[in-house]
Length: 532
Image 1 (tube, rainbow, N blue to C red):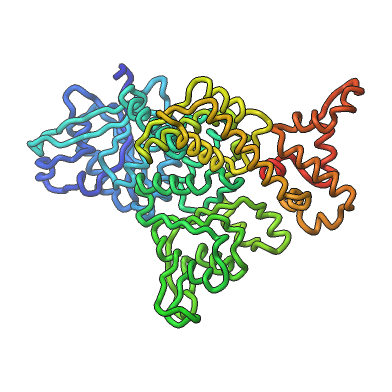
Image 2 (image 1 turned 180 degrees about the vertical axis):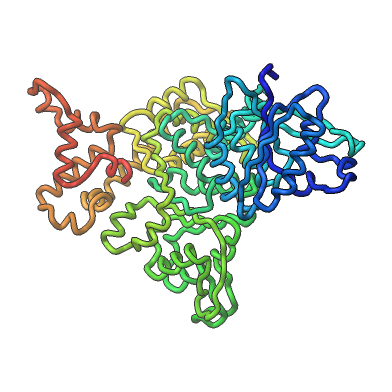
C-alpha cells in the first residue's frame, strides 16, 4: 500500500450491518469493522445505501465515528429497483462511478465487496476490473470472536497473481480454439482468425450459426466440435443431432424433422418424436439446409422463433429449445432471389455466418492436415504409418501445385492418405505409392470436371434469370473463363493464363484488373467463383 489516504467505497449491508440496541457491538458488522483495523486507517468511507435504509446508514456512520474518529463517512442515496437484476444494478453503480470525482494522484481507493447482494458484488468487481472504479478490492471477514473487527484483505487486480489467473483463462481460450481445429496446428491466417471468432461466438450465444463453404470443407466436423465445446463449458445439456437435409423428401422430411403421430400417413404405425424434439436443450445440425422444401422451411422458422411446432398429423403443439447450426454449400441469397429459400428464414439463421475456405485456399495447412490424417489412421487401425522424406516432398509438391484441384477438399486428402497408408508395406509410404496416388487423384478430378459442362459452372454462380439474359456466345466464353479461374489460386494467376498473348504487348500489365472488369460485365466477383 502507498502513503496516500485510503478511501473505501462500499454498499451498506442491510442485514450484516444492522442492529439497534447495544447488543449490536457483540456482532460482526463488516462496514464498521473495516474502520476498526488497528494498523489500517480508512480516511474516508463512501457508503452507498437505498432510500429506505437511510436510518440504518446514519446509525452505521455514527458508530464508525465512535470507533474511528479519523474516518469521514459520506452517505450516497442510490436505488437499484430490483437488487437481484443485473442490468439496473450495474447501470446504477456505473453512473455512480462515472460521476464520482476520483483523484488517483492523491488518494488510494478500496472497493469493499463484502456487503450487498451477490449481484451487486459482481458488478463492483466488473467495474473495478474495467477501471471504471480505479481502485483495489477490499474483502473483510469475521474473527471467531464475533465482537472483534475481524480481518481484511486487499486484492490488486493488477498484481501478477491476477495476471496468472487471466493467463490461465487465455490458455483455456487457446485450448478451445485448438479443439475446434481438431488439434491441428493450422498456419493459414484467415482460417485461424475465423476459428478464433467462432470460438468466441459459440460460447457466448445460443443463436443460430450458419456454416457455409464447399463440400468437404469440414462443416460437419466443426459443428460437432462446437457442440462438444459448448457441452464442456456447460452452456448446453442436450444431445447433438445431425441431419443431412438433402436426404429428406416428402412426408418423410416433415416426419424426420418434426415427428408424427400414429396414422398421420400410410405406414405411420406409431408415434415418432422427430429430430427437433431429440435436440431439445442441445444442438441440431441441419447440413445442406438449402435443400429443405417450402413447408419444412416455414415450420422450422416457427420452431426457431417460438420454440413450438406441430408434429405431422397432430393438433397438439410440441416444444423444443435447441440451438441450430446450419450448413450449406449453396448461395442462399441467390436461392432467395429465385424463390427457392425463404427470405425470413435466411434472416433468422444469418445472424452469425462463417464461410469455411476450401483446401485450395489453405495450401499452408496441407502439411499439418497430412500428418493429422496419418495420426487418425494409426488411431483407427493400430498401425503407425510414416512417409519417407522423398515421398513427403513429392506429395506436398503435388498438393501445392496448380494442377491439384482438391475438388472434394479435405475428403479428398483423407481418402488419399487412407489409400497410401493401406498400401504401405512395413508401415512406410514410398515415392512409388505417392506417384500412384497422384495419378489416381488427377484421373478422378479430370473425370469429375468432364461431367461438369459450362452450364454447371455458370449455374453455381449466376441465377437462371441472369443466365437467360446472356447470349449463348458469351455464355460459352464466360464458362471457359470461370473454368480457368476455378483451377487458379489467385486472380493474378488466372489473368496470366487468360491474357498470356496480349499481356506481352502492353506497357503496363495488370492481369487482375482486366479479369475483374471482364467478370464485372456479368455481375460476377472473384469471391463467388472461389466459394463455388
